[in-house]
Amino acid sequence: MTIFTRGKFHKKVERGRRGTSQQCSPPHTRMSNFSILVCVLPLTIGEPRQFRQVRQFLIDSHYSEPLVCKRLGLKNSEDYLTLRPNPSAPHEIEDRLDLVARLFLIGEIVSEAEMRPWLPEPVLSAMSSLGVAKRYPGRPEVWYATVALYPVRGLHIVSDRWSSPELAPIEAAVDVVYPAITVNTAHFLDSLPVDPCDAFLDLCSGSGIAALMAASQYARQAWSTDITVAAAHCAEFNRMLNGIENATIARGDLFDAVSGRTFDRIVANPPYMPSLKPAQVYAYGGELGDQMTRRIIEGLPAYLRPGGRFYCVTAGPDIEGLPFEARLRSWLGASGAQFDIFLFERRLIETADIGLQQAARTRGGPEEIEAWKKLFARERVEQMFYGSVLVERHKGDARPVTVRRRKGAQLGTAQMEWLRVWETAAARPEMLERLLDSRPVAAPGFELQVTHRLRDGELAPEQFTLQTRYPFDVECQIQPWAAFLIGKCDGKATARELLGFLKENELVAKDESEDQFAAFLRVLISGGFLEIDGFRVPRGPVVQFEGLTA
Image (cartoon, rainbow, N blue to C red):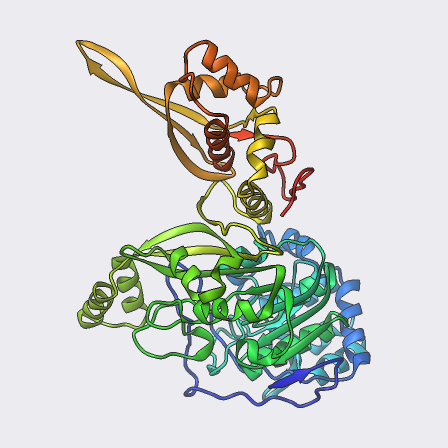
C-alpha cells in the first residue's frame, strides 16, 4: 500500500504502456455511453506553493463549470467530452478564460506569444514544474497541456485527456484515469448525499473526485483509494491542486489500503463491465460484471459502522429465481440481517444486447456472440441491472428491508434518501400506529387507469391501476374502494376516520382491521401515491424530513 498525505509524496510516476501510437478505448456499451482516448499522465507532485499559484490563476480566470459552459455553449460538464482541437483554425484567445479553456479543456496548442499577455511567468513555470503544461516536442515556441484539467462540481480536476492537440492517435496507458465528467460518473455523484459524516471512504476512486467533494463539503475526513499507481497519483495531485487538507489518498486493493479503519460513509464506482476474459484491473468486472461489487459488499460488515451507509453505481445480473438484490444480500453473509438494501434501477439491459455490444467493442465475430449466449445461458442470466445501490447498516435491532425501484422522471439523492428514510421507518412496528393517527394527502402527479371489459353486453370497470413517474416509476393495482379512498385523502381526516367512513358506507368489510388498513396505506406511501407529515415526497434537489428518521 502507498499512502499520499499532505503533499509529502514527491515521486514522479512512470506509467506502463501498451503498444505504440495506437488508439485506445475503454470498455464501451450503452451502459457507459462514452469512449475516450488515453495518454500518459506526466504529473509531478511539486511544492504547495506551485499548486497555490496554479489554483489561484484558475480561480482568477473564472474557470468554473457555469462560466465555461456559457462561454463554449455547452449544456453541462459532460459535454466537455465533445470538445476537440481545431489545429487549422484554433480558438482565438481574448482573455484568461479563453486561454485556460483552449489549453486544458479544448486541448489545443498555444504559442508562447499568445500566452504571455494572460499568463504570468511564475504561473507558467509552476504549470511546467507540475507537468500539466509543456513545450511541444520539436516546437519550443508553442505549449500544450499534457492532461485534461477542467472545472466540475466546484473543483478543478486533472485526468487523462480524450484527444491530442493535433488529433493524432494517442499512445495508450495501461492504467487509465478516466475523466470525472462521464454520464456514469454523473449518476454516481448525483446519488451521494451531502449530510455531514465523520469518516468517508471512496473505493475505486480514479481521479478522487468523490472523496475530494466530500472532504470539501461535508466529511470531517475523507479517504480515496484505488489499486493503480496512476489513479492514486492523480488523486493526490487533485487534492493538492484544490488545497484540500482533510483528505488522505491511498493506493491498494479495495479495503486493503485502509485496513483496521471503519467508516460511516463508503462509496464506490467500481468496474462493472462483463468480460469473457481478464482485462485491465480498472476495467474488469468479471464474467458477469459484478465481481468487484461483490468484493466490496462482502467487506461492508468489517468496514461500515452501525448507522453507516454505502452508495455505488454498478451493474449486475438478474439470475433466474435470484434477482440482483437477493444476490447482494447473500454477499453480506451471516451479517445480512443487519443491513437494509435499496436498488434504484436506471435501466435493464437484455443479454442479447450485451453480447452484441461487447462483440462490437472487441471487433469479435459470430463466435464471440455465441460465447456470450452460452455464458448467459449457463449462468441463467435473464437481464442486466444498471443503476444505484444503497446499503445501510442498522444502529440497533430492526427488520431488514430490501427494496427495488425503477427510475422515475428523475433520480438523485433526494429521491433515494426519501425512499431510504421512509422504508426503514415504515418497517418499525410503531409505524402502523403512527399511520392511523396521520392525515394522509394524495400526492400530485399520479394517474388512475380504469380498464373496462364487456360484461352482459355492457362495458364495466374491472381493473384499477395507479401509475406514477415520480419519485419512482411505479404501478399498483387496487380495488375500486381504494380509488375512492385516495380521492378523500386531503389532509383533513385521520386514517382512522377514513377507515370508519369506508366501513359506514360499506366500501370495505366491517371486520377490516386497523392494522390491515394501515399496512395498505404504507404500500401507497411507498409507491408515492400518498404522503404523510414528516415523509413528504421531495419536490426539489434536497429532501428534508420533519418526522421520524432512520
